[in-house]
Image (cartoon, rainbow, N blue to C red):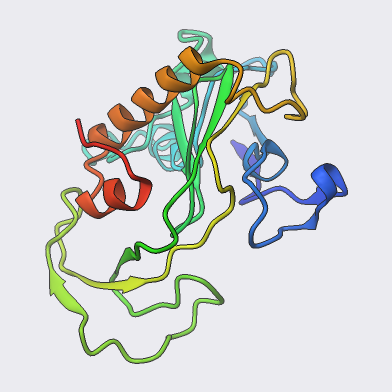
Length: 222
């Protein structure tokens, strides 16, 4: 099996940006990464199902026949390749640490802003710099250690770092009729925006998001 993918896209002038800018809204140019899988037992064809980068983990486990392992948030893609399923996810969360949190249901993309005045908690086994190269930041004398993550058995460090804004207001795009995300529908389609916001809240709850995230995003937990 051969898997070809990428960690992010690259602006080539779209929306007036070039590269992987630090404060650009997370348009699909950056977020909708390529994923190509060749498997000798399945016929190759294009799929429109929602997937996430974490799904590669479970896909590789299934390909090697490893069954008795906790998959966490990962879902195997082999059922898509075999044709036994046409989708494995109803929605996908995505974003950059410390900034907006975004969601797509395959038809709409919803970009939810954060409050830059509310820090984001960093959870790591090392005191990495969450906003730059993965080099140690300044010492964190106020850092706490504990088992704060419900899906991790080992203790981690927890310390705060500033949030940063990618979009000041919610943004909503219909990627079926507007694949280049040129027309923000957040003011015109209030009912859809509210539905996507509720779905975001439900998704955060399902993933056991820390309470700090709800404060940062100015959302109620569900």
